Length: 343
Image (cartoon, rainbow, N blue to C red; front, top):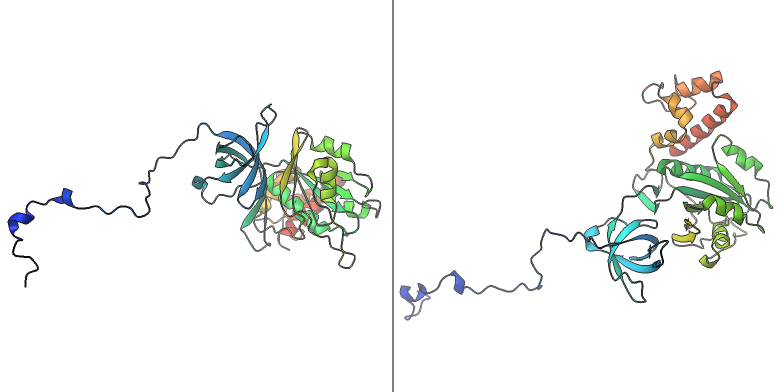
């Protein structure tokens, strides 16, 4: 049985061609995708100072009459690349900074440094904390809460790995003498600042931080946000007290935020009780001890430089007294930091 009617014959079908076919419309209404992307040559440069649930606070026009803050979101072409506090970025869209305006971050400029930490020492996946910092202010209390040399070691390892210069600030020195704690770091080229509970050395800290981008890190309750508030009075970072029962501090800063400090920046980070180093390469630590790194060139392949390492050129040189008493202290500090990676 044919489905053609009596009126259908070959001549009728011959009158139709492909141009008569009806094309179904695109149900989504999308235009065909092009591989060409705009170069955003008119993008405005800026610096990210805060990150909050997909919105980025950005300073633009730094040091000019048009200096202003604006809010931005990420452009689709960035993919999944994270934007973090301290990033230098390029923006398009509404960059006026007016209330209700929203710009788009289309590019992240190459980063000079990255401060990172992993969830724990077995996790090689790191989380970026801040970009483009050149100093780390490690804040630790002399008491209440008790100082933790091992946590400070971890901060130092992260700083050396990132190529960031560390500064150690000991707070609450009116509650306890920090001398015994500071002896742990005698072999390191550390700038050390001390602070009483009732007397923050604002002038000394400002001099050290001027012209730099400094990231402040520390255990909860050590007084880090108190220092930031003293340095930047309009920062209004929340401060908290130490729990009398547990001896632990409360997390009072829940986000990483940058504040202008003269010609520099200070980046306040949330207090942490652990700092994973699963992403760190031990070679990065050795590179920070330039005198020991020069000696290590004569070490056997795969040398760990730890006390039980056979034929270690660094250990042999220190035992001969080639580097003096300071060399022994530096070797002890270096070995402790290396051991931190495996503990």
